[in-house]
Image (cartoon, rainbow, N blue to C red; front, side):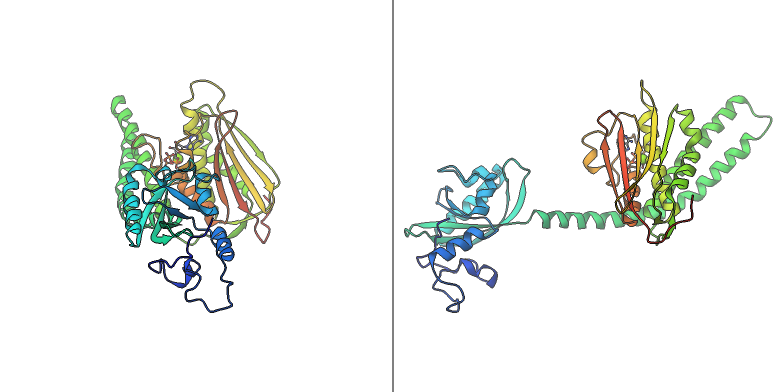
Amino acid sequence: MKLPGHAQPPVNPIGGPGNAYLLPCTAQRPAGRIPHTERSLDALLEALPLPVATLAADGTVLEVNRAAAALGAGTPPAPDASFRAYVPPAHQEAIAAAIAAAHRGEVSRLEVVYHVGDGPPRTGEATIVPWKDPAGRAVALGILRDTSREQEIRSELVQMGKLATAGELLAGVTHELNNPLAAVLSLAELLAERPDLDPEVRDDLQEIRREAQRAANIVRQLLAFVRRHDPMRLPLNLNPLVRDTIALRRGALRLAGIEVELKLADVPAVAGDEHQLQQMLLNLLTNAEHAMATLVQGRRLLEVATARVAGGLELIVRDTGAGIPPDVLPRIFDPFVTTKRAGEGTGLGLSIVNRVVREHGGRAVARNHPDGGAVFTVFLPEAATPAEPG
Ligand SMILES: Nc1ncnc2c1ncn2[C@@H]1O[C@H](COP(=O)(O)OP(=O)(O)OP(=O)(O)O)[C@@H](O)[C@H]1O
Ligand SMILES: [Mg+2]
C-alpha cells in the first residue's frame, strides 16, 4: 500500500502506543528509533496484521494493505470497488456514515460485520479517521480489528452461565424425582406379583413399570450430567470394562436383533474412573442401538474395537444405522442436541461422553462411515502406571 500520511492529518487518528505506527512521521517519535521514511512506514503498514484501507467519500476503496487485500480472499478489490462488497446490506449504512464523517474531519469507532471471501459473517471493530493521501487528497482511513473470536468467547461464557444455572435447577429437580419414581416402580412390581390379577391389569402394570423405568433412566442421565465430583484416576484396562458393559446391554441388543462384533486389541492402561468410563460407553452403545432399531433393512451390526495408538488407546464404536444427520454432526457433542422425540431423548448422552473423555485428558470424535452408519472414536491417553492384566 502506498502510505497516506505525509500531509499533516487533521487529528491524531487513533492515539495510544499500540497504534503509534499510524502517526505521521514527524510526530512524537524519539529520533533514531525508526527511520522516518515513507518506505519504512509503507513496509510497516504492509506488514501490519490489521486490515487498513483508504476510502473515498462515496465508499470506494482506494488503497489497501496486504491484510485488507486478504479480506477479498487474496485478491485486492477491483478498481472502483466499494466497501459494500465486503459488508452485508444491513450493516453498510453505519459504515457509510462513518466514512462521510471522516471526510468532514471526524473520527468514528464502530462495530462492523463483514465477510472474508465467501466465508460466514465475521465481526470487527472499525476505526475510521480523516486522512490525506500523498497527493494531498482528503480520504477516510479505515482500520479493522477482527473481534469474531472475542464474540464467540463472550457468547460461550453466557451459554456456560446459563448452563450452570440450568444445571443447578436440574440437579434439584432430578433429585426430587428420584424417590417418587422409585416408589412407583417398586409398587408396580409388588402389585404385578398378586396372583388374582386380571391379565389386562397385569399388562397395564407392565406398561407403568416400563414407563417409570424410562423416566428413571432419564433422571439417571440428568444426574450424571449435573453431578460434579472429582473422578477417580486409577490405572485400568479398558477391555474388561468394554466386555462387562456390553454384557449389561446384551438382552436389549439381542431383542433389537443387533449382532455384536468385539475386536479388542492389547491396549495400554488408562488412568480413569471406571464408573464414568462405563457411563460413557453405555451412552455410545445406547445411541448405536437407537440408530439401528429403526432400520428397515440391512444388517444390524455393532462393532466395538480397541486399538493401541501413539500416546494411548482408541475405543471405536461403529454401527450400521442411518448415520448422523449432517446438520447435527457439527454440534453433536453439545448438550440438549437431539433428534429424538420429546420424552425419548434428552440430548445429554453425548455431552456426557465428551465431558468424561475430556476429563480423562482424551478426545471424542464423531463421523459417518463411508459405507453407512456412525463411527465414534474415543482417544484416551496412556496411564503412567500399568493396570492389572484383564
Ligand atoms: N450412532 C448414532 N447414529 C446416528 N445418529 C446419532 C448416533 N448417536 C447420536 N446420534 C445423533 O445425535 C443426537 C444426540 O445424541 P445424544 O446421545 O447426545 O442424545 P440423545 O440420544 O438424543 O438423547 P439421550 O440424552 O437420551 O442420550 C441424537 O439425537 C442423534 O440424532
Ligand atoms: Mg443418546
